[in-house]
Image (cartoon, rainbow, N blue to C red; front, side, top):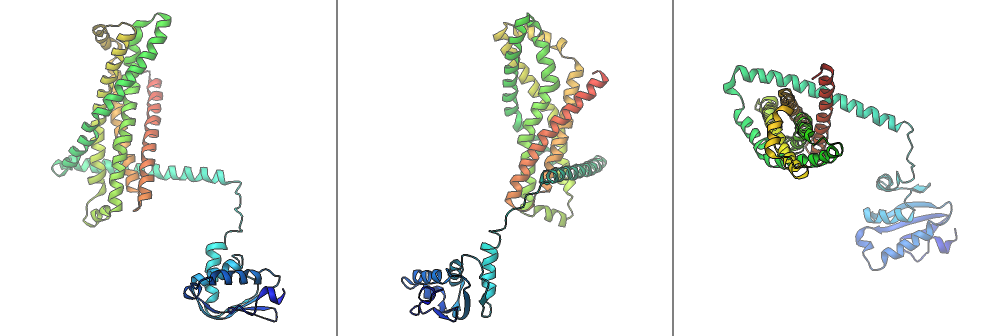
Length: 377
């Protein structure tokens, strides 16, 4: 490396002797703040680092801060030279720069051929862990319910009443609107097909069985899971973030009795009523659509409805409503209690709660369909 290109004698912070580039002087932000000083030192350092086998000596540096070290680090190409003489404490500064800036830059990401299998295994283990926690929560819920029935005076009736209002009364509007529109859509689609074969009179039986037995309970459960389930998870999650759950444990208040039990009981009471309400609105929408599409009178529709829908179908819908409500409340409380005290975990837990609740409702409805088909109901 030529002497004139590597370390110019006129550059005070540099000196070249015997193939060693000595860096000296003040390398603090105060010294580099002089006009043109940073550009002058950067050019000199770049020329010095351009040769092969350059050795560096930093003993002559009187003051070195992060800004000066970063300027030298950039001149080195953001990597440590092979031969450097350090003063006390200097190597730690450049090692930190190496770890934070250049330590992982040149390390290629290793491809894991079994990554997909590991991801599937992790998902299965997480699902198994959540299922085990839900079973434990269900067992504790049964014990808490038995204790409340033995001593009803000490039960959380105020909280149950509040949850019934929030999850039930405040959900009447959205369930009525969605149920009515679903009934209209289903009636229009069914009428088009029935007109092709001249079976207009079967519109009542088709709407009655499909809505009362399947669509009503599932539709109400999905709406409650998205509305009330997410609210329960977020509410308990905020209590975790604000450390209210820890305060309850310190005061000896059980999470199961004061948080889980009121919400499960409230949804178990509310869901069958919402199912009947959704069924009524969907049948009303279907009746109006059938009257407009097929010319079926409302009087004949209402007269034929009791013969088309058996009492068994109503009880099946109510049973589904109770079990769907318990499932949604348990899942919402479970993910609410698992939220970590940060906002990111709160959003992720609420989303996971809603998705899991809707998936669980659909799976449970499919299980009911298999069971009822097997026993001939």
